Length: 65
Image (tube, rainbow, N blue to C red; front, side, top):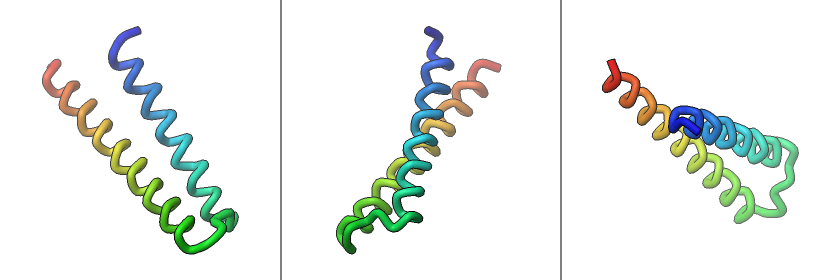
């Protein structure tokens, strides 16, 4: 598997997990305030990880040119 394919697949999985957490928050599945804070923290971490991966892929593409 090429490294670009690995990163692309990983990014898809990150986005999928983000959507799952977002749906949990929007559907009121948080049991209480600490659970809500946990879910929002998890969502923020997933979004940050996706952004870092996107930036890394962009840098890699620029270095290839």
